[in-house]
Length: 297
Image (cartoon, rainbow, N blue to C red; front, side, top):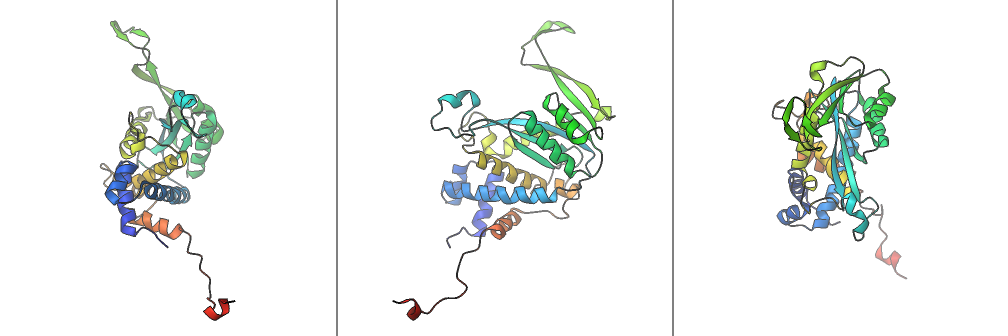
């Protein structure tokens, strides 16, 4: 069976989590681009499954949630005139939840920006928590129904609503702002009793930057965008596995998973490669072989 050696797989995954494009990784590893894509999908599958099992009974106390935009094959406005566009072409959003204290990413979702995706995310988040938490989101209305449906009244929930300029600022009459320019934000308590000074989304917005810096397909104004939804989701699962378990956080001095008590050791890319090889189907060889004379006519 013709397979890549483990050290080659490790090299490929190291390049991918550092934000290199598929073509660049293929050139460095001296393999085909299809080989890199297949390994990415295999890695994304095992990383997603492992984190789904491991992120349970979490002791998080302060969570932030946000969604980051990207697209598959073509931007939504260009899909109609795109040639051979797949069914999933267009805008896609990555919904991310982060623990503000341990910097752990307990769950995420890849989908549209509708209330159904928000409900799916919040239901999954609630099932992973050990106790009541404080939660902050932006002013996206989809969160209101989703949080209420998942947590009921058992959450301290607030929104940080951004304010956008539309002409002038009453505090500064001589200053003019465009309608798309953010001029501030206000805090709104939705349910429970959240701690006022800890209402914010700065950590999850910083995580959005980390995503864009660590995955080439999230870089704006390039041709490295995702062409398939499957590859896009796989890259995100690999990124969060590396972020949670392999990458030492500069402030914490440990990985987020270690800080949150999900694991007691520092993972390496080789551990992910081992999971891929363990999950790979074994060669289908017969248990016994007939003698040549028995096979002849």
